[in-house]
Image (cartoon, rainbow, N blue to C red; front, side, top):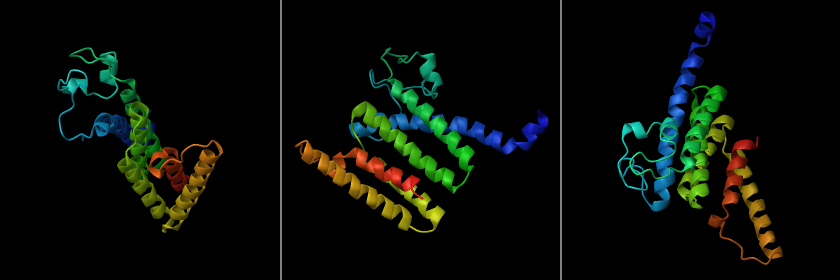
Length: 205
């Protein structure tokens, strides 16, 4: 046991760090999920309850644990806390651990984790608010584009893949609208198109 710990000391230490860092970032993402659709930023005010407006204390801000301890309710007004926040914290925990095991502490870890963080935040906002932030799309796009450029030494791969997927996705969407006699959506409204572009950047080699 001692020999195993000594041989894998760096990995074990890193995993423990990720188990703390992942949920912490997830907790921060929850502020973005709640505030961004309201036109606010996470820096405007200390975390507060969306029901009674009470400022939350450190004991209320422990990722995952606080939700379990309070049974998903505010300690001050008993208002129900959306479960999506805990899902976000768990998703960020899994993201950080998986990226660390795959890439270690490296440039790829930073860029893929950043892109994953923005994707999780986007998905949570869309799920809860039905609203998408073009800014978060841009951050995820930049992180993935930087990683592809770093790995391949050129912007040609991700640029051509992204443009190709975008063109075909838009053609498919216009054909669908023409067949079913629907009004073609604006590019900004076709969220699945942008998800397809992001996926093409990260997956095509």
